[in-house]
Length: 69
Figure 1 (cartoon, rainbow, N blue to C red):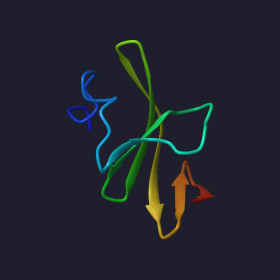
Figure 2: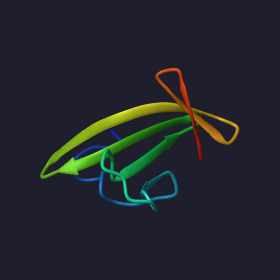
Figure 3: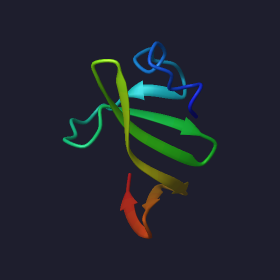
Figure 4: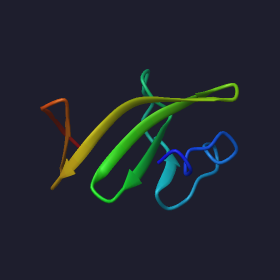
């Protein structure tokens, strides 16, 4: 995860790393690693990981809470 979100690469979109389609106050980007989802934002040269969750079917589980996607 650290290598994939290095400062130079964090803003470059790919199949598994992309800007969120819906506006969010918490994060700007989503990064997928298998069934794990990492939500982050970039402030200057710093990548701030905001949320990490696990995908289960059409739901996302973050800190034991289920979110419908």
